[in-house]
Amino acid sequence: MTQGEHRSPGRRTVLGVAGAAVLGASTVLPAGTAQAAESRGRGHGHGFRSLPVPTVIAHRGASGYRPEHTLGSYQLALDLGAHVIEQDLVPTKDGHLVCRHENDITGTTDVADHPEFASRRTTKSVDGVSLTGWFTEDFTLAELKTLRAKERIPGTRQENTLYDGRWEIPTFEEVLRWAEREGRRRGREVWLHVETKHPTYFRALGLGLEERLAKLLRRYGRHRADSAVFLQSFEPSSIQRLAELVNSPRVVLLSAASSRPWDFVQAGDPRTVADLVTPAGLRWIASYAQGIGPTLDLVIPRDASGRLGTPTTLVRDAHAAGLILHPYTQRNENSFLPVDFRRGTDPNAYGDVFGALKTYLATGIDGIFSDNPDTALLAAADFTRS
Image 1 (cartoon, helix red, strand yellow):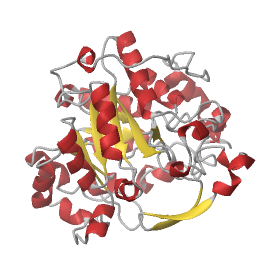
Image 2: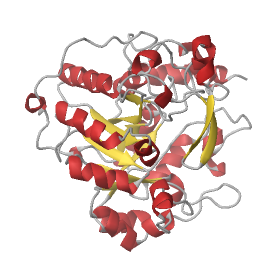
Image 3: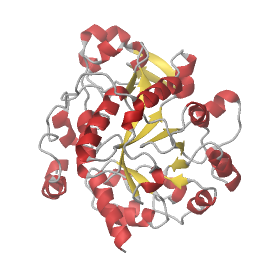
């Protein structure tokens, strides 16, 4: 049974709210320069505390339904009702910020099909991991614009391959323009959740992310404490640097408890994520950030069999430190769910997602990253009614 055969009828029902233009249409951004930042103050004075709780953050857009980090993915997420849309930022050779989950674009673009770029394939060490492929920092923006995005996990999300080649790699400035246009059309600001990827690695290459990001945030009026944007990173020093440049809300991302942020590794800081999620570690984060984005396993660990165990005290401790929590990532497929919420033997089929989300939301988290924002929104509505 293919993925499409398993879930098409229900999916059509859920996606019925999406605009027809999104369902395969190419998005074209208007030309023109940015208006003065102060004229973009729609929603000024509201801030992130005004967002619905639980907040649904579209992880790389509606990446469960469209190739990730494309304008098609972002547009569908917004049309489905996501409260916030996520972007991951990496730089080009000539210093532009583009939206890719990784600087390695081998699996998310058609770069391998371009013979003119065959010689760019190389092996690099990124945050201590050896990778072979093509990397954004070896391409100018003009060169990247000749590529097209494709589905990252086609074996799992076969239906998404229908859209391979439809969209190009967007720059973050293009996304800001898109968000501004959609905000005018909808009469409300479009919230973004923006991650600096591998900031220590890129700073060593002379491609520091934070200054470039701050410049764009100021240009588009998203540099204030009540701006409709979250800034996030797995490297605390990147968030500290951003705190010195802009007042936008900031979130420290947290991986597995035993891991160490790469900037800690480079600086010889012995602390692990386990140290950062202690009350003392959370107070330290609260001195320069407004929230954390922990992996869901830090909220409710899985046991050796892959089933959910007992919730930790992270939600209580973070709230005591004044921090909000936006854990990651909810996905609908069995292969991503805890064992106790999987249904059937097909790893690509949807499991009991609503049961899993109900369990996670009951811990008191303030929001959740989701590849399937329509699913998360329904679960959030169920939760708030209960």
